[in-house]
Length: 401
Ligand SMILES: Cc1cc2nc3c(=O)[nH]c(=O)nc-3n(C[C@H](O)[C@H](O)[C@H](O)COP(=O)(O)OP(=O)(O)OC[C@H]3O[C@@H](n4cnc5c(N)ncnc54)[C@H](O)[C@@H]3O)c2cc1C
Image (cartoon, rainbow, N blue to C red; front, side):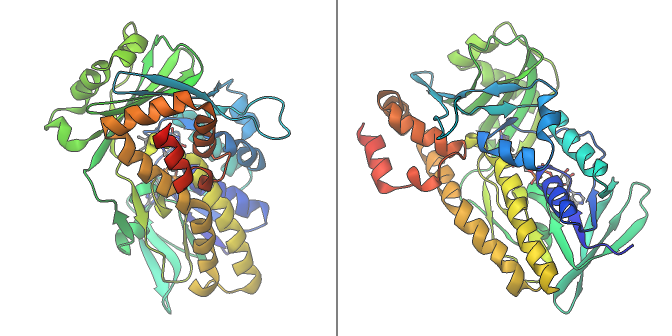
């Protein structure tokens, strides 16, 4: 059977692309080097704006069947001082305020994968793609190794790389543009018995980094710590993580009677952007198209949304039987239009939170001016356009409040 599209990676981006293309009648083969279910270091909350996408992909009911936690917004504290609690803003035409899903990646990614298999996409787990095949300057397939270390080759007019932050295209084509700054490392584990006051994602910023704490149901809380790697001074993640987490008074209050119930998983977490692909036959979606610092917790939404755009552009390419870069670069234009300001906001927030002076000031301003807080959380929750918060006027109002 001929394959129309090969997808590398079965995370949210790869599965969303597979489901979208399958719905349009394309024959898709999805390869992932892992065997599912598999875990993933993540804050595990999904922007409220992802709900309609999850519905369109046919996975929302399955997620809801897990009775997941729904978070009302975010609570941010600055250097063990002031804390501001912000609800997602009311949306026109909706009775209740939006909420964000909080669900473990182990379960979420397994649901995506089940759905992909159920609709009839050919899934090849434990298939690691190691090379692209080219003809006339265009990607026309992939080569790799399966679980028995047997080589495989697949050909298709279009390859979608959804391989995440270490995607093959980034390595093979040198597309990654690392942000200037120190290497960040994220460490995560689930805790049992945390005293979480309410259904919010609690972001606590202090030295040596920030944490995101939220309930993922079943009396479990996900605690993610992000620090500059150099602050670890070579210490082992398990020991460093617990010490650093418990050094902050707000976190201690939440976690003092809780138990960390798994070994700490660590991942490098430096934000990066990606240069445009210059050959035909290839699209990059999800983290492979750029990684935003996890402070704003938008990665899953951006992954799903980038795949939706990629599916539309791929459909146009198939209709024209033209998979050249000329046609596919429309994806690049659209993704930049939609995401560039979000990446910029994330970079601005990074600058602000790593300075105690600015972080204190911002938290105080958000407390004093709830309308500014709602705008910011609306953007972070992908409910409002990024330009509402990425403007000189907004920043001026924030810093002068
Ligand atoms: C510390 C941290 C906290 C975060 N918190 C949040 C949060 O709270 N909310 C949020 O929305 N986002 C968060 N994110 C971001 C989110 O995790 C990512 O944006 C999201 O997982 C991206 O999905 P993806 O499908 O692009 O990649 P991934 O989920 O990384 O999936 C990529 C898949 O590709 C496979 N793969 C890779 N290379 C190959 C290959 N060569 N051959 C075959 N298979 C391959 C991998 O096995 C993997 O299954 C966080 C990220 C970090 C690091």
